[in-house]
Image 1 (cartoon, rainbow, N blue to C red):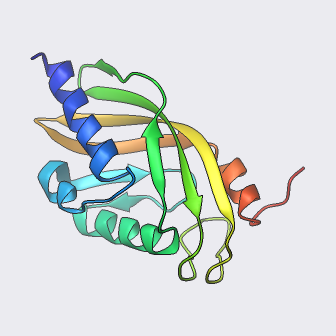
Image 2: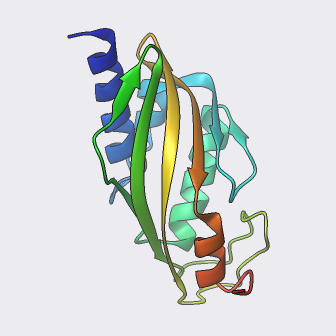
Length: 149
């Protein structure tokens, strides 16, 4: 396999095991670099395995049906892999204060569904950064944290 194929395989596993319908947090130790950066517009940037595990634990507690899936073939060049996705979930869990735009009280029942594009940097089989551009405005509007224009 080529380097790009190897990197795509790492990203497919990350998207499936970390962001997919069920979450296996052991994937963080398996393929995330110890100081991995996870950065999306909806949340404070996260750095390191412990911080990334804590983020996902809290996110999935608040949104138990959280799920993201690919919507296009991955593109790889050098150390970078780009993926398009769609996803979301319904807030039926505890209060959630991780959104930069504000907090949700417990179990609002509100659903979010949005899209995005993510660029991941993979070095020696480990993800060193995941930086995404998401439609956070759509998600935050659906959750009632910002008002529609």
